[in-house]
Amino acid sequence: MTISIIVEGKNDRARLKRLLHPEVHIHCTYGTPSNETLDQLRRTCFHDEVYLFMDNDPAGKKIRSLLRDIFSDAVHMYTRKGYAGVEGTPDEYLLTQLEKAGLDEYIMYP
Image 1 (cartoon, rainbow, N blue to C red):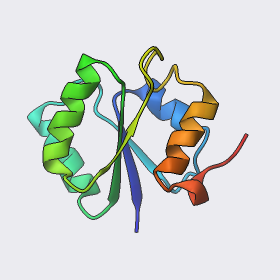
Image 2: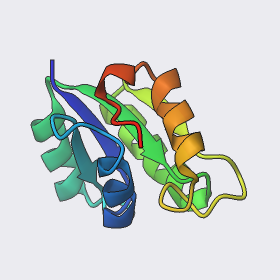
Image 3: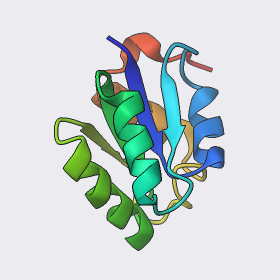
Image 4: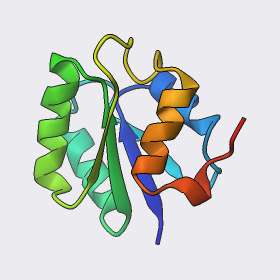
């Protein structure tokens, strides 16, 4: 099965790409997604195992809520409050979250 992780922005995607095998697809919402973006994500990730990794701020919580309605079986990953989003989260903490989500086999440890 294909693994898809949905993040907020391109910097979040770039950060995770450094830690994951290329076979893991990382999609961006580019902020609060429009209905068109939500439809595109639904079509693209419909048959995938989906993971949501949003910032721990009001915008991230809003995006997570929108995506939760579409991907009700998605695995949720969280950054810690105080980190500057996914892109500002230390690698050690990102790796811990990826491991907790069961993505060990896809991690490329630094």
